[in-house]
Amino acid sequence: MAVRGSPVGDGEPIEGGWLPMTHEPWMERGRCREVDPELFYPEHKGANATHAAYKNAVKICSLCEVRSQCYDFAWRNNEQFGIWGGHYALQIRRAKRRKERES
Image 1 (cartoon, rainbow, N blue to C red):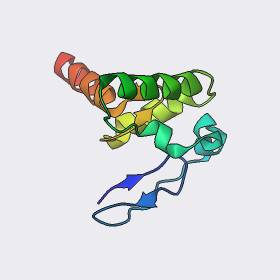
Image 2 (cartoon, rainbow, N blue to C red):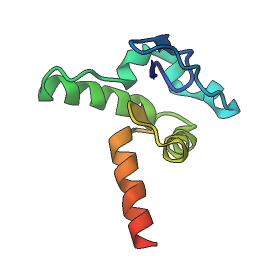
Image 3 (tube, rainbow, N blue to C red):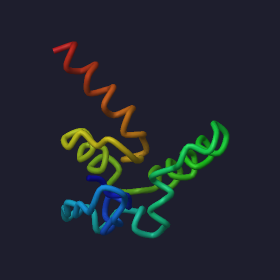
Image 4 (cartoon, rainbow, N blue to C red):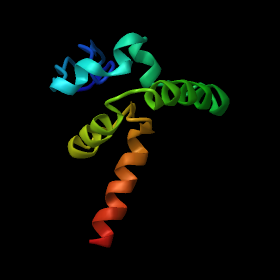
């Protein structure tokens, strides 16, 4: 099961079912609430289009007061998709693996 939507949105049902989003108080202050949630889940439509979507999401994240909480949420919950705190979920998982190897 998977959900697509902003970290603070309700998500939307997609193939495989519906999974409600977790809600934490800091999420109410996220800048992602002000834009289309799809921005944080860019589809791969070629490298240039995907990179442009990523840059747009990161720009919004860079102005967000809860960016670090968002990143930490993705870290703790092993988020598989989307952009969290200005980083792809894959980047966050890689950083987490590096840190675990260094420990």
